[in-house]
Amino acid sequence: MQPVSFTESATRVQRSNLKSAAWGMTCAALAFSFVGMSVPVKGQQNAAPRMEVLPLRGAISLYDKACIRCHGPGGSFYGSELGKGKTPEQLRKMVWEMCIAQGGLTVSQREVDAMTAYHRSIMHSEPYVEILGTSPTEVIGEATPGSALQLQIGTKVIPVTLTENRWHAAIETTKAATIIATRNGKTTRLPIALGKFTLHQQ
Ligand code: HEC
Image 1: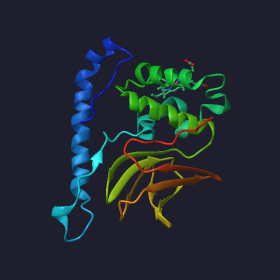
Image 2: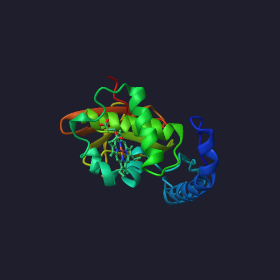
Image 3: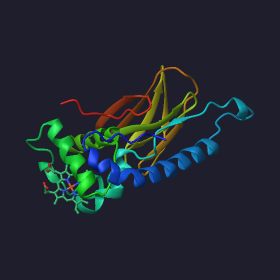
């Protein structure tokens, strides 16, 4: 279970402990069932490495759960003013406050960072990609719906299927790999590592 870190507000931690414990259990169960379902190599079930999985809540599913009703699919109701005049820190604070006040969410620091990165992707019309689970043979994550995804391993490039905002791919080797997302002529690249997400640099 991923511990919920909540240093920004000690008082809220108590209020949210029960809820987050329930979430953690749900996520652990989900993660376990995913591992169970996805034994990757025929005939080698016993040797299949376990997947390291974060609570299965990427920024896009959190947004769709808690923000979409006011801000629209993919942030389409924000308009071009989103984040205007805000520093990255101010945007993060706004996202964090919205998660609590409007979204009713209990969120970890990493989830707030990911949600902020997702908003920065929306501001720059770039595809967002996040990695939620990895093993030497498989990787799972989220990406902006409608993106074309590819996994690059060495010189090899394989297509990856995106179903709504979810993707998973079998990685055959333990070589460094990169997930590449393209949408409306914009491309983002993310080296595969647990918990990483694309972050607009400007
Ligand atoms: C009940 C409606 C509602 C929900 C749900 C909601 N918001 Fe908001 N949000 C607003 C309103 C209204 C504003 C504009 C007023 C303001 O700035 O406080 C806003 C403003 C924002 C802004 C600033 C936009 C800008 O132009 O810079 C961000 C970022 C944001 N919300 C993120 C979120 C996130 C993330 C969630 C989900 C966790 C969320 N909101 C859920 C109503 C909502």
